[in-house]
Amino acid sequence: MRAVALVPARGGSVRVPGKNVAPLAGRPLIAYSIAAARESGRFDAIVVSTDREEIADAARRYGAEVLMRPPEMATATSSDIEWVRHALDGTDYEVFSILRPTSPFRRGATINRAWESFGEHCSSVRAVRRVREHPGKMWVRDGKYIRPLLPQPEGETPTHSRQTAALPEVWVQDSSLEIAWTRIVADGEIAGRRVVPFFAEGHEGFSIDYPDELAEAERLAAAEPELLPVIEVTA
Image (cartoon, rainbow, N blue to C red):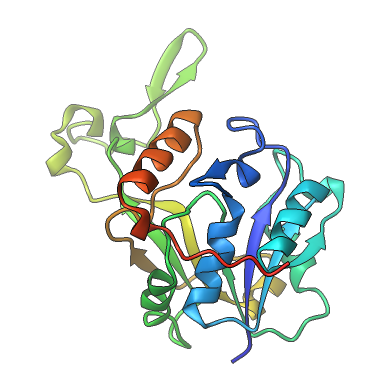
């Protein structure tokens, strides 16, 4: 089956400005997702979707194709389905994988392990990890008061007053990896209804979403350089 790796890299990150080309171990962050896709040997193409020439230049340098996305698909509130549909339009790929630049410790072997769980039995595979802060103990503002985020069961102890071990296990998606059939995009989704979980090991699911995490990634890369995919410069 024909498969494409999609690397989303808009230029307007708020929490970590310029993060997609921020240096890590001497290379721009985006280079590691391109390298991991190449390491896996799974893809007929590696395509970076971006709105910035600086990012496009870095992507080409490390061997990816580039698709410039329209500005309206590169805002802080743009949904993934918009740029994914734009990237797949007019292509004949059967499978796509989203490999976000914020997960530099995801290797080709990581992708291949996830691929073993993917097939006709599911819509997609998505990386998840167990939550540390349970939503059953979360609250939202309601005027001058707060109320539980989740609906509470009638006649039972509220979730916020239970031990965490007594609450159902909850998993949160991480940004390291998604694999899906392209046919589900026509329904306006990138995950579909039958989603298989992928559990990252070690630092595979490490995500850089805040400035201190970029510093932590640099520390990890210096201490254990083998955690990073091997980079090739092609241009």
